Image (cartoon, rainbow, N blue to C red; front, side, top):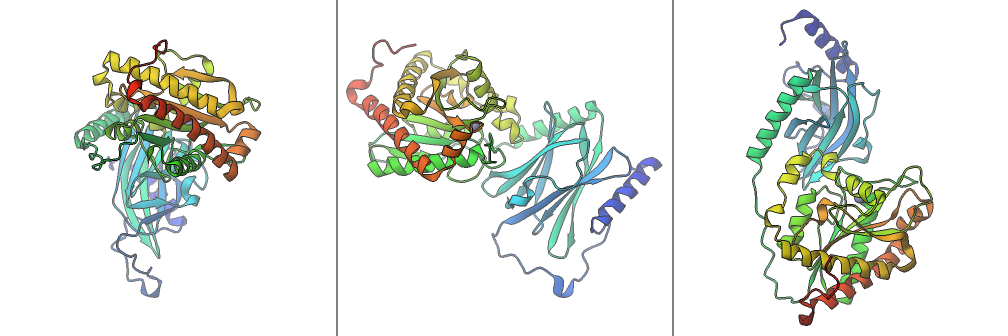
Length: 429
Ligand SMILES: [Zn+2]
């Protein structure tokens, strides 16, 4: 593949471009002795920091590179995913600095949006949306002073070649995915019912963004932590959270986390955004429904279900790896009836802060557990200035947590009494 001379000259030009960026070429031999400029040794276990990501143009439009600046070298993997076409680069034991979350430099036509963030504990992920089919030709570290640079050399390819590589990568992923069972919850003699709080999005997936650039992932985490604090303080229920920091968790993992712990209620927290409709505001509470209540509900579910895709997962694979094998109809019907009650209690507790149609249903993937009542709360609309301001405000978050806690406690305590084992008459959908 290196034989044709046009390719060689294009490669030479790319070397030159990388060189102009201040990089040694990646054909340079081992790093030379660097005297006093050598960076201090990084302590064992300290994370590698991803500092910047910049695209570098090649001489021909089908050859270019992504240059990723890190505090030191680390192990990495790359793969491509089709429909939508994406390139994913995973870097072990790394963190993404705030400055590296957007690409710097001149955008390249083959590259669409770029996202970078924590993907799982100690692993960062970079996801690049591709406007044209592109494959990695080679990827190597070059070292310069205190910066380790990962040069990912890319070449535009045919749609067929891209799809073939995407299939190969998917097969590799499936065979290496260790179906590690969820660790059994600790021995727990505490008889109080468990509420699992699930702050949506996180890490590489920021969710919606507000009028002042607030991100949904930060807001729902803040409200989730305030809600936990409030629930723990009153001591009526036990609480667990699917995430307590800024990390990505797949939709399946969120549900599995709560099911493994036999949660009495699963509460997913989100904040919506509607472009072009700044007047729409207020909280909505969703339950699972085969058919969406209205267009707004359908759109919310469609958007929230995209989280896995945004984070560079294969959405179809994830949907197949779900939990539908045990869809016992009876359990599901009872579960849905309980979820309806929980949703209604929550809407009542939120009082005037709700949207004009506060109770809705749609096909949210995160609400599919057949045996665990699950609700999803869109706390408000980040596209509405009033909602956006309130949701980012610390004392408003606490007030919201107080109301949510009242609603959730009312549901859990009422339905956990021994005489509440049956679904109340008239509640079955
Ligand atoms: Zn969301």
